[in-house]
Length: 178
Image (tube, rainbow, N blue to C red):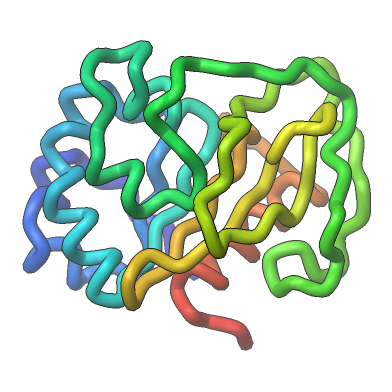
């Protein structure tokens, strides 16, 4: 896939979002950016788009940053209204190796990094991996679209299983299973 960096002003309408297959939401946004795109992003995802939330999504959309954003909570498969919760652990434990997001990936070492999590998974969503016994990778449907949440933080230099989870999450959210 081709990744394109955009500003919130470039994806704050459904018309602008139709140029993309998936939107990645996480720590690189500010609260005002998330607030600006949330209503259009929700409409777009529920109409068939895809969203992948990474580490930082709950912190930005949840109660730590103000009033929780209902539009983000509606499209990510975990409760994003909670405050920031982090699990400090060394491994991401894959519990469903048969899903397209985790296919070919087994438990892997994540080092001393923290994993953001929500203890509450949306009804109908599936937990694919855990970090320290908490949901670390969750997938679900949002209307006609798809949402993925991984509490892993991404800094742009990932490789191996960590990178593969992100790639496969984006592909699944985009309905691209080739």
